[in-house]
Length: 254
Ligand code: G
Ligand code: G
Ligand code: MN
Ligand code: NA
Image (cartoon, rainbow, N blue to C red):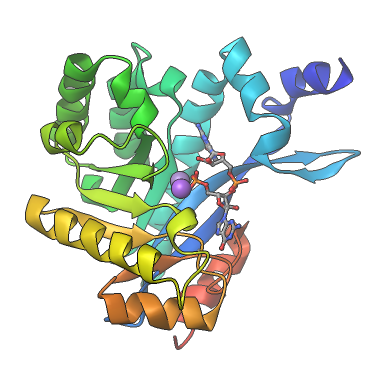
C-alpha cells in the first residue's frame, strides 16, 4: 500500500504535525487551552486527518515514536505561546492505548517537560475510557505516575464508551470531556440537557473540571452556558488550526 510506505517516511520528513483547537472559558472569556490534533501534511494528497492514517500508525507501533516527537513539539510550542504573554495557556495532547501502556511513557512525558521548560501543570493528557478498562488497577497506577509529574489527566469522549461511573471514581482524573454526542441536538433537547446537567453535577462531586466538545453553533454555546458548563470547544469557536494561527485567536476578544 502506497500510503503505508509514505507514512513510513512521513515522520523523518516532518510531515506529521499538530494542529491546535482552542478551548474557551465562558466565565473569563479567555482561551484556556488548546488541544493538539495530529495531521499529516501529505506531499501529494494535502492535509490528512487522523481517520486516514492513525490506525495504521497504531498497528505498526509507529505512534509511540511519532507521539513522543509531537509531544515535545507541543510542549515547546506552548512554552513559546506562554513566553509571548499567554502565561496561563494549557495544552492537551491525546494518547492512544499503545502510547499509554508503553514502557517509555513516563520518561517521554518527563523529558518533554524538561526539554521544553513548560510547567508540568500546563500539560494535560487525554485518555479514553476504553484504555483504562484494559486493566483497571494498572491504569490507576499509571495515571498516578503521570500525576506525580505534575501534569493533568482528562477522560476524552466521555459518555460514549464503557462509561462506568463506578470506575470513574477510582481514577485520579482532573478533567472530563463531554462528548459531542450530548451537544449536537442542543438546544431544545430536554433529555440531553438532563444528561449534561447530571454529568456536570457528577464532576462537581468528584472534583473534576469539564470541557464540552463539538460546539458548532451559538445556540449550543448559550445552552451550555445556561447549564453551567465553563469550558467549551468546537468548530463554532474555531476549527483546529496550524500553530501560526493560534496567536490571533488567543489575543481576540471573545
Ligand atoms: O482531529 P480529529 O477530530 O480528526 O481526530 C480524530 C481522532 O484522532 C480523535 O479521537 C483524537 O483523539 C485522535 N487523535 C488526534 N490527534 C492525536 C494524537 O496526536 N495522538 C493520538 N494518539 N490520537 C490523536
Ligand atoms: O476524540 P477527540 O475528542 O480527541 O477528537 C477530536 C476530534 O473532533 C478532532 O478530529 C476534531 O477535528 C473534531 N472536532 C472538533 N470540534 C468539532 C466540532 O465542533 N464538530 C465536529 N463534528 N467535530 C469536531
Ligand atoms: Mn481529544
Ligand atoms: Na473527544
